[in-house]
Image (cartoon, rainbow, N blue to C red):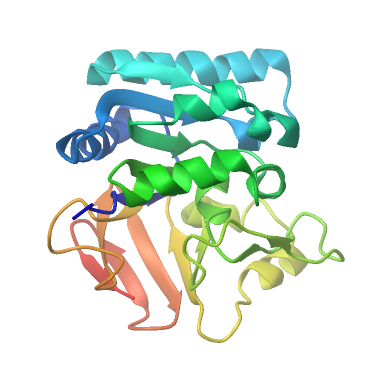
Length: 246
């Protein structure tokens, strides 16, 4: 019987030493599930940024792969056309860890929804590859992404991997960056949806052990700060290594 891979929702810190242990554990989990020692890094959320910034993300990921001791596969998926590129799609096959880094969650979701690349990623995760999203990458995995940057526009349909969870990344810093109107949009969630704040350098992870899985609704907090359950369930602040039940 195939085992679904681990899943991590990260507040910030992708490819940095502070998240090295988590990324190493995610990769090891994928390898233990029969996947290759290969780390696929997908910078789609930063696809509208400058070439120099995209190169920054590539080098940052390369350094993390060197520290972990794995093979980097940096996928230049910057627009929707790229998500139909068969050469790029093949790169996710058999990877131990597939990771969406930060940037614009709306661009990420619009680029990947209903594409062969997303379908391939989903199938790899269902068969044991670990999957992670940091900041924008975590936000895009929900049912929809609230439009806190253009508050008069509708939400963007998300990847729907975790439709009952909405993530606010950088939670311990986020509301100092955005106006009150945008904050109110972020804090609203449909009935039946858990609203989660994930602090910087912190993550919530499921599937790394037999005790945590999406099926039983158990998530473990890892990292330096906290995960905040804002709506739904037992609301409160959870520090590592607490377990959150959703």
